[in-house]
Image (cartoon, rainbow, N blue to C red; front, side, top):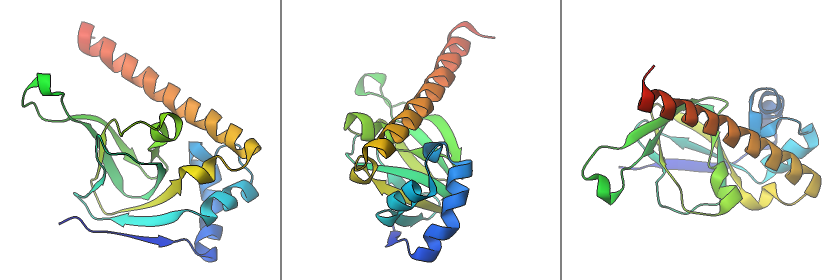
Length: 166
């Protein structure tokens, strides 16, 4: 049974999170306290139990998720031409990591599923909140580009090692 809860962040939640997010989460790097506070005012706190799907491959969504507590796995399902092979784990993410940034950039369907490995607390940020202020938007876009670049480099390395051995 899938069951998750969401709630608006209250003032105390926002105050507790701000410094931690700016310091530890690459998505918020370079943002001021005021810019982070503005993003968090429209954000939602979501909780998921272990085994629950947070996002599903192929679904649409305009949210970025920041993992505050817990761990998740990112799974890519095989294409129909791959037969009945099981999904492939692309990554494991922990507190401070984010996912969903690709949907903010390309507005395409989700490229992978994300499942909770343990009880999780996440912050869910709506796409529109990210693009309201031009200066903040530029910083966010730069941070997303940095995250995608880092992940692409890791995938390139994994591909080369997997294809040619070590």
